[in-house]
Amino acid sequence: MKVKTHLLVAVSVLVFASLACQTFQPGAAPALPVDPTVVAPTAPIAPTLAPIVVSAQGLSQQDTLTTLYQNVSPGIVSIRVLNAQGGSLGSGFVFDDQGHVVTNFHVVEGQKKIEVDFTSGFKAYGNLVGTDLDSDLAVIKVDAPASEFHPLKLGDSSQLKVGQSVVAIGNPFGLNGTMTLGIVSALGRTLPSAHESPGGSFFSAGDLIQTDASINPGNSGGPLLNLSGEVVGVNRAIRTDASNNTGEPVNSGIGFSIAVNIVKRVVPEIIKTGKYDYPYMGLGSVSDLSLDEINALGLSNHSGAYVTNVTPGGPGDKAGLIAGKKDLGLQRGLLGGGDLIIAMDGQPIKSFDELIRYLINNKAPGDSIVLTVIRDGKQVDLTMVLTKRP
Image (cartoon, rainbow, N blue to C red; front, side, top):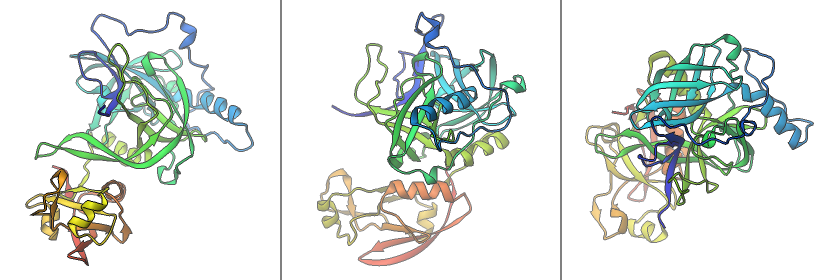
C-alpha cells in the first residue's frame, strides 16, 4: 500500500487531509467530547512576559513532564479558522509579548476569519501577518491583554540528538492542551513544500525533525519541546497509510516538525516584511542511490547528491554545474555524466537532505557557496552565487 504524508491540520472532509490540522463543515461544530473536563487545560501559572524554561535536572521524568506542562501550556493556543471549505482546527504558540503567534501556513490557508483560544479561556480574533510556503510557517497577530502572552523559549535544533526525549502539545481532534511524549527519531528530513517552482514541481522543505511523539489532525502548528521546555520544532505532518472512518489520517509513529532554527530565521522576517526569501541553487538532485545505480553511473563515491538537472540561467548553470545527460537505461530516469556533490563550503554532504539542511540554515540570497563535486572521477570545486527562489 502506498504510504502518504499528511499535514496535521484538521480539515474539511471535502478536502484531502494531508496536514496535521482538523477541519469542520460550515454551521457544524467539530466533534468534541461531551465531558468538558476531558479538554480543560491546567490552570495557568502566574502571568509573566519573560520566556519560560524548565530545568529537568534533579527531577524524575514524571515530575519533569508535569512541571514542563504547567509552565509552557499558557503559551500554547488553539486556532480555529473559517474558510471557503468550512473551517479547520490547528495549534500554535506565543512567539513574543507583542501578541505574535506562530502556526503552520496550511492551518490558515484560505482564511476568512481566525480565532485564537488561550488556555485561560480568553478568545480573540487574529490577523494574518504573513506566511512562508517553503517552511509551512505563518504568523498571526492577536490583540489581547498583556497577561495572556506567555512567549515560549526557543531552543537550538542543531543540538538535538536522535533518541532525545521530546513532547508535543496541541489541539488534536479539538482536544485542547493535549501533551504526548516521544523521542527524536531522525534529523534533517526533507518533504515537498507548498511553494511551486516554475517547472511545476515543488521546492523542498528541509531540516525537518522526525519524531514518534503522537501527533494527529489538529496538532498542526503546535510546538515540539525538549524536556527543558524549549521549543525545538513546529509540528507539521505525519506519514501514514491509514485513516479513520471520517477520512482523517491516523498517527503511525512517524511525524515531522519544522526545526526551530528555521523558525528563528523565518518568523522575525515575516513579522518585519510579511515574507521570507530562501536561497536558490537552480538544480535538481537525487541521493540514496542503489549500488547498481552507482556502478552504472560510474561514481567513485557511494554518497552525495547526484545532479539530475540544472535550470538554464540559474545559479548552478552560471557556476558550471553539470547534470546527467547520457541515457544508460536506468530506472527513475537517471542519466549518466552528472556531477556528484560531496561537500558545500568544505562541509561533507552525504545526501540531498543534508544539502538542503546546510543551505537553508547557513545561507541567504546573494551569498556565495563553494561546491565540491566529483566529475569524471576527479574532484572539482565550483563557486556559486545564490539567488532567491523564484
